[in-house]
Length: 135
Length: 249
Image 1: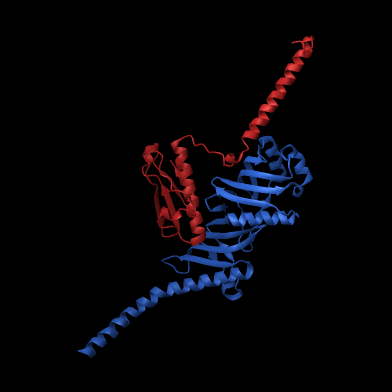
Image 2: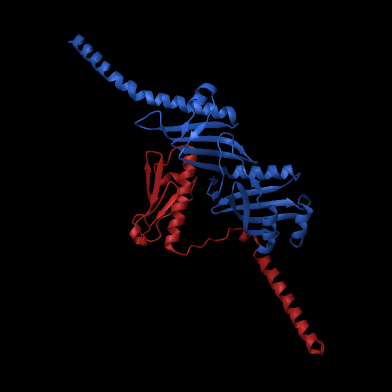
């Protein structure tokens, strides 16, 4: 304690400065450890509910169908045709683990829906031509 | 007997002939219309290839239910898109302008859908061209699509970055180059593209969000997607997929 001055206020100031310096060092250390090459990965995206997961799945499937159409000028006959160019892996329903239902109408419209909307306490849960229908 | 068979055959052929003509006529007119539209677009838009697909009404062949136009390698602002597909529901075309002047003129439609696809190569070329435009050489950028993010691995000599930028990130550049990783998302509003970084690593340091915020404010929007002749559209949505970035209206 002999190193520190006897004045109480001055002593507090030194403590605070030391604390700030330590915090900065810890923060810089954290930034440094997070910057290694093994951290060259995208952040994880968290999904809270099954319903939100279904919305995400239907939306990404719909976008993949749109992209397929943009190149081929016709809708895919099956969702399997979207892998791997437009979607890495076909998602399955979170509650049932079953595939989503896909329909094409006269090559001018398409629809992706869940197997059973009642599982989500809904009458309809589908995406048609990019528009989400949920009621 | 043979003569009788021959007569029967000709009789049957005469009976079937009108059906064949009626069946094949709409297809021919459809193909001709597709060709005429393609030609009209080609005369106004510079691109590698144009493909037109029309779905006519089954009851009335002069009515179009759906028209889709795909253009490959079109320049939209500073980006050369791999594919641009514009789809119209129930379009009404100015037939006179198309047949006499070879011009495509849409009188009305009940819906328009625009899909623009940008591959990794296309975005990489765009970034390298931008760097060259700014006189920056030896810029090494590699992109990877990891939905919903675009990953960027970069290696840029320190001398190639603007002094203002270098000032902000000076603490993170001990050596003579900027090397690291970025994961970012894209957003579009009124055809203006903005990039938002979710994670940036520079020379072994994770860059704090406050610094990233400064860059986002400074450089966004970084590009404006321009509508192409004939077709007017506004891009308001960006989706990152496994091989393409999809821009939609």
